[in-house]
Image (cartoon, rainbow, N blue to C red; front, side, top):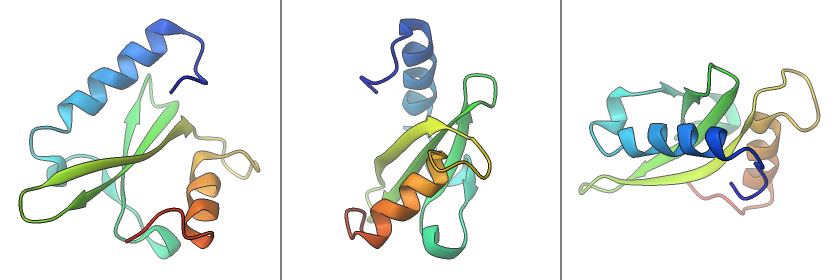
Length: 92
């Protein structure tokens, strides 16, 4: 999140991430296609997305990407996550 220069936005994103400590499987939405197995939750007035994965029986939440939703743009957070997955930098 160091790429996000606005401290207030970082704090708001951090607050949403903190909320994932309680019932993360009931929050956000399950992703499909290449990102099946991951979930996404909105933050900062619906502009940012936090892509996360729940691992194991003890429920470990792994934040895999945070960024702005720019539908169709090359730097869209979902496109970035798909690229990381194809490069095997994200695991299921």
